[in-house]
Length: 283
Image 1 (cartoon, rainbow, N blue to C red):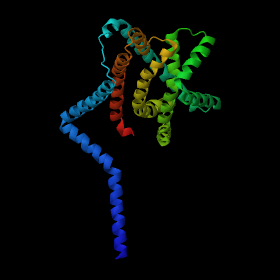
Image 2 (image 1 turned 135 degrees about the vertical axis):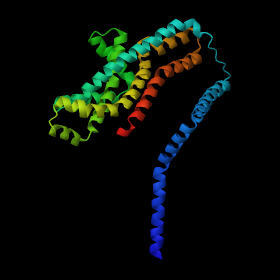
Image 3 (image 1 turned 90 degrees about the vertical axis):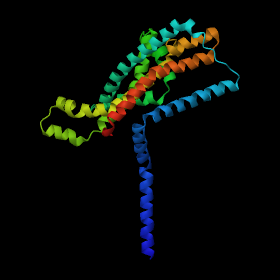
């Protein structure tokens, strides 16, 4: 009798553990299936969530008896548009350079040369361990002055690239290390050259693992570009700051600024989500 109770209790605990482990997965599959059958539910849910966010901010403004007035924005449309375009330019250039720097840093850290590995490690540790705003001041006023980099646009691009490159370096290095070494050994065994190993074995798998994370990192590039206003790069944040200084509409300026950044980052976030779904089997 005691043995039967023990086995019964053990089976109950196993069943409970299984339910807890699979609850989220089963719920997610059920929700996804339900959304596919009733796509209007997803749209309705999104509208409801957006309405809650708008209601939260509207209530907050009502509590301080503040009535937003955005009628001044058309008068500053050229200034805002110029800042918007500059943010796109800085971010796009920084994305390209940070990707190149991240690849070089990852290759150095995976190198057999000890000096290269140490230089890459120091770079990643320093950049990831210190705030971006400190790096902006340090590189612009110290390093930039010493090396004659006085163009604020390119100084901002370089600073952003150095900062984001450290994170991209770890993304790329991690994706390489996640590849099963047996696959590379098998490629060598059948006579693949190093270039063929990269083309047919290593790069395709690394791309599947890195693209979703890179898309998310590129969204961070756009947001981090706002800190370049600290060195008077007239990107979007600096442009809105100047507009608010003229008409003293601080709340309206920063609310509109948030909308503009969402316009820039949401497409990147959408691409990241699509890539995650596309390459989910790789995980």
